[in-house]
Amino acid sequence: MRSMGKWSITAVLATGALILAGCTGNPTPSATAPAPATTAASATTTPASATSGTLAPASNVPTDSMEPTVLPKNASVTLFYIAMADGGTSGPTVGCGDSAVAVTSPAVSFTDPVEGALRTLLENHSEEIGQSGLVNTLWQSRLTVDSIDRSGGTVTAHLTGTLTMGGECDIPRVEQQLSLTAQQAAGAPVAITINGKTLSEALSLK
Image 1: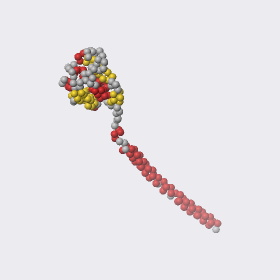
Image 2: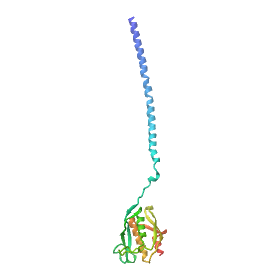
Image 3: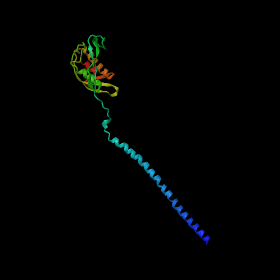
Image 4: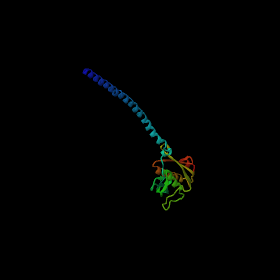
């Protein structure tokens, strides 16, 4: 009877061990199997949410804010007038034995320095410049700056209006007053047109 009891106890313990082994062994693969699916799902949704997050603000930016803003500037400009019969002593030699002399203006407001300098020169309708002895050969003209073109690496000033001169010697004087004033403002040579004609063509008609 004792041996029978021992076998019975042993069988019960063995059966219990098998049941426990079955309970603890099966959940392990079922618990770990969904893990890769969860990781993959989160990996695929993260870039999508990041992409939508970066694109949203861009659609709210106004397109005109991307354009550069040019603010008006207050500064002096350099203007050129003529010293009669100076022979190039006071500045660059001009035809008929004159000189072109640089004069600094009071502060003026402008956004483009070439426009500002030419506009200031053309708005002066005094024949003589104070007590300096300098002459303004553009004093009778009524010209305005229509536009400044800076395309193609060159600067072109387009003027419109009426050009009036006092004689043949005024041709080189007007040419130097306009060209030197524009060149000084631009820091480079400037092409000038008057009513759609080149400066030399406009002057040759007079």
